[in-house]
Image 1: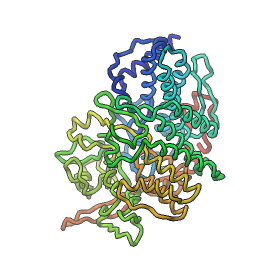
Image 2: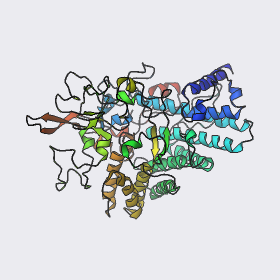
Image 3: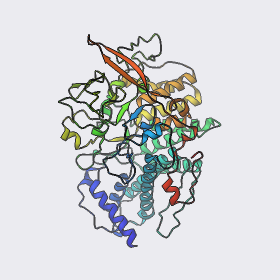
Image 4: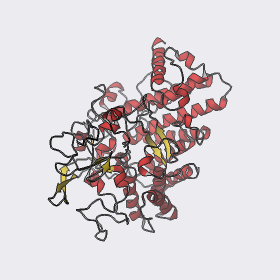
Length: 554
């Protein structure tokens, strides 16, 4: 019992130092010395415990790629650095994965993912095991807290199964005396559990909260998670017989979110990732706030530009590839490979989808009062700068332009990480419904709603296969760097197509007359094997649990 008490005292103490999801919680006095018994005898402390579970969520702003337990300042990145959209900083371990060397010991992101989500699941199981005994007259609050915990547990399992397939399904509070070696459940069993939990949670979750409680799970979040899980369940990786019922169920689940009438696309694509209130596109996000809870995106992923008014010390860990930039259409909706598109290789960013300039910094971009120069010898590409652009591109999306000085930047970013937003739901629906009925009017309406914000022309009637390709490209540009492509390409079983080819950079030379010459070059060869569609169970977990069985191929 002493060990268990220490566990919960540490958990509540951690909560007190990192509370973030609601303003009223920030005013709670420290509870460092509250015992676990006391936590579940007071509904207010129990509510704080649920808030603490949210802190276990692993966001894209917090991943480490330097090995667990190492210096916090070493290594940082996004899962999408292991895709054809991004080239990572040279010192990151993910470069091994890019080169086709993926195993159970070298993918630190995978180990972190496994451990963080099981911490979340354990906390949710404890809450669900104990909350019924908490004395309160507010049964509605108790029901909501239970629903939040069920959603969070389902979210943890969703994060695990899309990466690893079937995983140990632990649904009760584990005691020290229990056998902690649990075998993997099947993927189908895990999907059923997640879907059932989402349905149960949705019944007791509100449609929305006041600003004081933003960040908590809603009915839309539960239904949205269900829609995502069912889309993955219907996808080629998990649906080899192409069972049409799975696609139909996925489309219906996404439509249920759309029919809530709560969500809409945010007017400005760049501000979507900055605006914390009045943002109807956000369905579920991890909340950050200065000074107590910030992330390092503002400087570690920021482009390193040597100019007087731009922050110094940017780590430059992010470099968008030319492959990714080429995915953006022209403003008229034509691909740059279309000979009628009027694409000009020596004026490559003119008349392009507006999302390109709201996501990526490129030669000629205006950033924090400076014109970005990615040409040879320019302010973002000086040979003396070890963090200069490797591809000719840097990151704009997620980086708040208002923080200019080094001091301001090093305080950390505090924009939220969006796990789920309405544009994803629209694209989920379009993808699933297209597989059910082809490019019908509802498919066109959903994808065109996403395209409308960026000013791209509406798509019109086309065949199912053509629409499939349009949807896949739309996901690539609309959901860029949000860690969807890492999984999308895998669930489509297209890793050997996209991740097994060279990634490209652009070499830009400034001519004597001030014009530029742009030349695409191979930057790096990439490798991918079919069994990479599922990640390896981390070696450290195989050693801890002798009932785990590794995924095939590793």
